Image: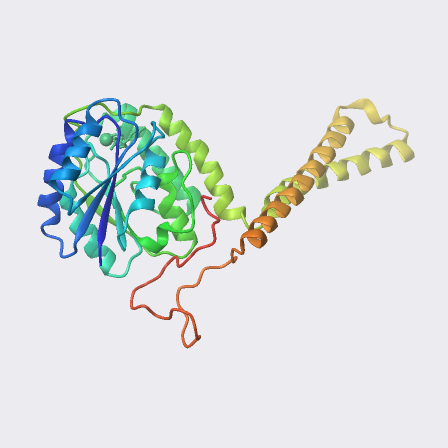
Length: 336
Ligand code: UDP
Ligand code: MG
């Protein structure tokens, strides 16, 4: 078994040598052989040179991927995951706010039979009003909406079985939603408190606006998790909710007009009903288009609509491999 630690790097030159040291110290306690995949996300400081030096000094452990420009933390993580060889992949930050000494505990938890082990910065060392508070609110919201109850979605330090990370792509700020996605394909998820240190070198690349992006991403994620396979339930549901009461109102208006000779236009109700019926109908039609897209997706790419944990006695298929396979070859739904 091999452990891959994937780390995105954007302008962290002072942190890198310390990070490399900390990895060696922290992972000494780990029984597994390990590699670290450092992804240079278009750094403009001396990070690239430091990475090149580390790679030549420690070829047994250090792998480096240089991206052509700055693509953002999520894309950098995705690049790292694609280039990692490990059976278990641990993601973490390069700025030493996460502590590699926590990795053995995460891996130990994974070995208990979990597919995702999420780090929880119980004692977070960041500014309260701009970072900790918005993050707490975002976590509460994400937990509620996705139904996956974690304290700290935003903590990059998490360990994943390789299979959980296969089968979908990461967009936007979405690396924080991997646990929610993994849960939707049946992965078992655990949480472990981890250390958190204040940033000593370099600057944080984020501020308050990220929380807004996360909230917007949450809409997408909720839609994909709950309605990807049956979008008509959402669009049709909205459509019917608009159409039924409006149609009822129209009937009442018309009956009043015919039997009591009450004019149709005494209130805006007539126009409103018509408008909502049209809107509702539009929404239903959009739902049908979405259904077509989903079918194209599944049928053109041969993606199943289910995920299998294990099969027994079926020739030609891998049976019980002796480890839990929460998300074996999931369809590319979820965050795709
Ligand atoms: N990062 C990156 N690309 C970016 C921004 C950040 O690869 O465009 C990396 C950064 O080098 C660090 C991690 O993502 O390793 C987290 O960034 P940061 O520490 O600024 O975020 P915070 O801890 O403040 O949320
Ligand atoms: Mg940081």
